[in-house]
Length: 495
Image (cartoon, rainbow, N blue to C red; front, side):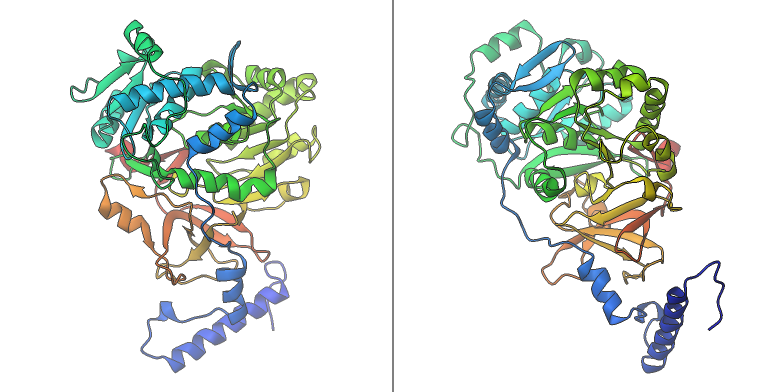
């Protein structure tokens, strides 16, 4: 056996020969078979790739977001739930205000399988509004006031929300939609109307229809390759199982302090908001100006004693520079975890951070995911040694209740070390794209490795298995890019 020792390990060279022999043997025994369907995997490799390296997608106990939030209110009524600037609210205060707004929505005939748009600046009211929509049984549609008017118009026209929750600072900037009513939360008439509604938790007796964990919780629009954004509809249960299936890694609890750093129109915010509020923790809503000033943000992390920080890598690189320039502040951080997501992480850039901070204070975690799979798909705990690995971006192993597959163009699994397209299956998959059955069928396809009629999502991301069962992220198979975690289709810009 002759091979370049600079390029290959002996076992790799031997496996290449084995696969070539399997291919030739298959071609001889099945001469009429499509060459792409000939199996080159050893039986033990197929077992590893399809079974051993994947999770168990058994359905977990189902619940809705409001029901779990209300459990936290019972446990921690006087704990601080929300902070914005110098203002804070307890769990009891947040719950009462959300209940009154939820009952106002119910009184207007709003409930399950309807959308309510929110067009609010970063504030306590924004989070209360999200919670109120969910308590009414509806799903929220986040509208970032900074979006172009044409995009906001499309989202409103496409989703046809029952109403828009907004305030006087934003209402005038919204496109006029004659058939969609606005509820302006800081208007005197709305404040007076809210005071007439009970602060008690609404139940299915109050709602226009019972709320199921399978009802939609939110719709988030992502960039579309044809120039048309697409609305991803995600049910309550997807969010609940996300935290249930990752809690063994993190042990989130009522002592944790989180930041809401990202726009609520970016699905990383789903992890930030409910990671705090479904575990009795404190959520610090970061003012927009501070989110764009790494030095001010570093100071806020210290001031609030933040323990769980979620960042796109591009944002963290800037924070890392502030930490380098002000080490006396950085040494006061109380962080337990820094969790990356939204875009590829350059591992080598973390060497600078590890030069000033220990590996376990905080732990650095890389999580890969997409909106259509409910925020996160995989998990990798980082350390100094990993940052020296020469790889595009290590994304680790799948969350335990998800399946991940690296497949070729004819949906055959590729061997470790070979690049293919990444597919995801399991209970994290979104319902689909609103009003786009053709696109939904194209991206959410039948899982050929499941006998239960399960779907899998075609991500458009390229990946490869490593020999230890973890994944390398290798980029996109199309023209999509990411900026601060937001997916941007170049085709949408061209259109």
